[in-house]
Every structure is written in C-alpha cells, then in structure tokens.
Length: 109
Length: 112
Image (tube, rainbow over all chains, first blue to last red; front, side):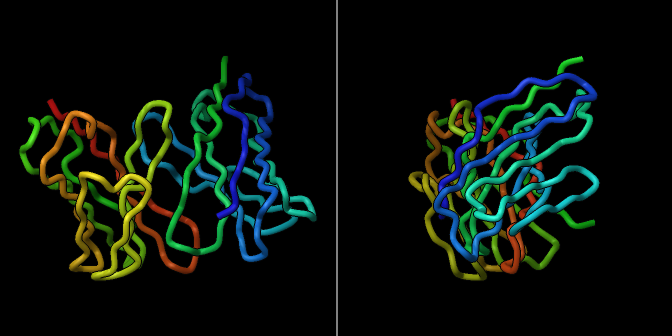
C-alpha cells in the first residue's frame, strides 16, 4: 500500500475554497486515490475517487498531476458544516483500506 | 436504502463479560471490516473479511474475534473485554470492485 502524507490540520472561513494536498510518492500503477470525510462520532463517508487528471462531483474536485505522486482535494465555498476530518487513501481494490490520521479542517464563521 | 447497521450504538460493560457487536449490510458486499477509533490514533483496522468464511487479522486484532457465516453479517466478539478496549468501533463494507466503503453508525463501547 502506498503511504500518504497530508497536513494535520487546516483552518478556513466560510465561503472560501479549501485545498488539501496529499503526497503519495510510491503510488503504484493500479492504485486509485480516494478521499473520505468524517464528522465527529460518525463513520467516514466516501467523497471522491480518481486515477488521473481531474474528477469533479457535487461535493468536491480532485486534481491529480501527470506523475500521480500527489493529489489535491478541493472543497469549493466551504460552510461551517464542512468542518470534519478528511482522509486520503491510495490503493487498488485490495481488502485493506488503511486510514491515516487525516486532515482536520476547521471552518470558521 | 443501502446501509451498514451496527448494534448496539452504545454499550457499557464490565471487565471480562463477553459481548458481541453486530454488523449487517444489505448491499451484498464481499468485503467487510472492523475498525476502532481512538483519540490521536485515527482509524485502525481490527479484522477484515473478503467473503463468507474468509477472515484475517488487521492491525490490532488482539482481544477480538470475528466470524463470517453469512455474507451480510460480520459480528465482532470480545471474549473477555478489558478497559483498554474502550473505544469507538466502526464496521464497514464494500464491493470488491472498488474502494468506496460504507460505514456503520459506530458503537461506543466503555469497559469498566
């Protein structure tokens, strides 16, 4: 499994765009990049997944450069309800989903 | 509605009293797993199962047992709970074809 590195915490204000970058230097050819969101005392929730270039859904965008050694989750115009822990996972469809410490995003009014 | 259901949501028990936390999913997923979450330590995998009758240890299996007799159910068993097993537990399931996992609501266990 590729090891990931992401910031421990980030602060933002309502209405701003939040970008969280995850480093995964030893990503393998078959690996996908997946992001989860977790609110306090709730289970993680899948946000977005990508392999290369850019992926966008109703919640976020995921930017992946050509070398795939990093990825950036972009949350547009955050609100207070986007305060959560965000996890970056890298792997193929194997059985073991390993969650690191994640990035705690705090959105302030 | 697609979901993973854990029971109970909250449990306070005494040291040494066997308990079972149930987990059931209605999505016909092959993969199921259990995690515990403790402050500052993130989510750590306890056990996982790739299909019926196929289980294996995760990162922190000591003190836990699991079984997978049916595809939809994956109970977590604590034969002799100890205070260091006080934690928030999550069950998850996913299809073998992708990495989108579905998590249960969590079980907050306190062992006194």
